[in-house]
Image 1: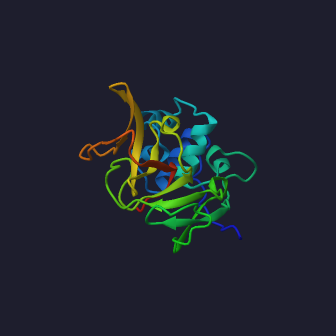
Image 2 (image 1 turned 90 degrees about the vertical axis):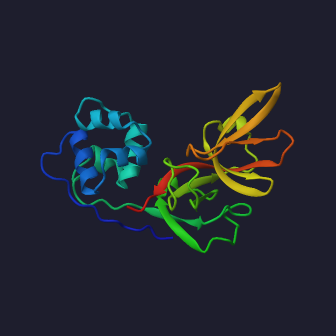
Image 3 (image 1 turned 90 degrees about the horizontal axis):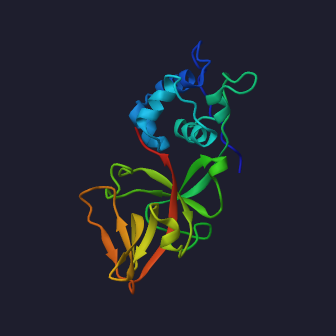
Length: 222
């Protein structure tokens, strides 16, 4: 599969500091600080401090910001000769599902579409899922495309606080997982980030299976 090449606009003159380069790229893409912070899953106040040059992010945060801006990290940090020139990005296609696939994504025949993700995010056990409901608002919006790692029957205690694709009594749902002790028994609680979405308390004897863990937000129409 050939990588796709995406051209990038040069940064304006004077964007030599990380914060200035970040601000310039954000504005080029028409994003507010609030929108970029949500895409990169960081605090908006911290992002503002980075742009003002008051804070220097570590590499994991730089990678998250680069992914949110859909640019190579080297373009964001200004590394290497000619870093302001157009930078090619390599992508790989993953199956895009509108509903949770029945089985491993690599062998499922349900996906009619594919979606390009950055090469370093690609793996054969991952797939893209289009959000069709609003239970995870405002974290995830209807129509968002998320990257999911297929992890059948993952232990809920190992994915606490994560947004997961779950099967409850055979019905699929996208919820944040937590485990609590109630009356001496372990209970799995599935919650939406939308305050109007009621939590689901799964009976310890009930039919619950975690099928995948959401890793990244890879597309949001603007």
